[in-house]
Image (cartoon, rainbow, N blue to C red; front, side, top):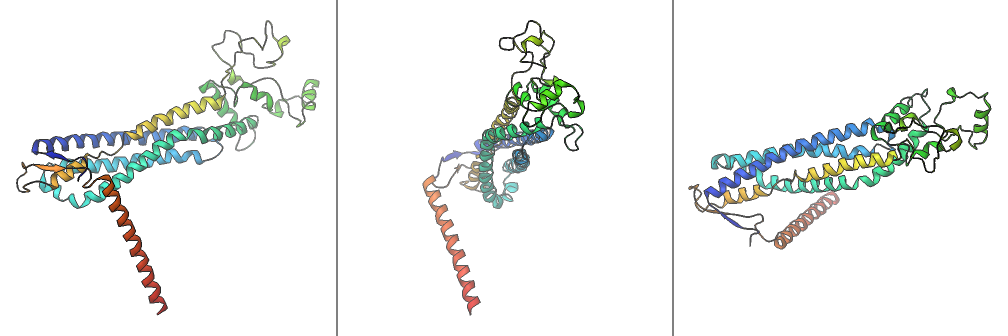
Length: 338
């Protein structure tokens, strides 16, 4: 018994073909949007590639670009077939291709589902990539004279201002690294000697943050140095005072930005799903009661048999193909021996 069998007359077949044609071209537009979002996502990741711990983060945007291109091609072909289905003579030339095309559509829908799932799950590895990448980037903040790292300061400053964040987890991360280059330190000064001497690694650590951590909305001039020293500033208590630097860490800010972007793309990918309506168009055209009379009634279905029967037939076909391959291999071995 066919799955979801329906009866069609000429009027219903025309409406079905028109509706499926519209949905295919809607999916083409969605495919273009997925392609554009994939390119945008790739550019956004590349802009901050110095803050990423590895290059694996570019796998998802590359996959989105591929899916977008495939969606445009597959859905455009399906739209053309639906348009030609209104003319039996034009539709006849597409009939031999429809079964392989529909099987390809099933595989493409599986790819779409996996891509959407990957968009939702990518947040987890991205979190570790950003955490390690930001940690390393902050260490190189001071290396403005080192080839390959000279733009790290600019990258971090622009990122902190754009995303209104400070440090990796919070602003205190800057207290744990030397972010001022040695060329700007006066090693003859006692205060500098004392700070370097008090550190096991010989680093110049201080309770301060770069200027890009400052919140311009704060009414008080930015306090970015000696942040834990209450006596260094008038009417100031860093335990109770509302600090005028960004409190959110950049890892959380970037994760929220990229996570929201990936969730949006994941939902959008599902809109590209190829419609099963073409199967109705194909079967309704193939089962005309009188092929010479286009106005005669016909039947359409999604599967010719039930889900269970279809699955059983598919497994039997795969087993027979496997046995056929074994027989061919065995025959080849016998021929070699003889």
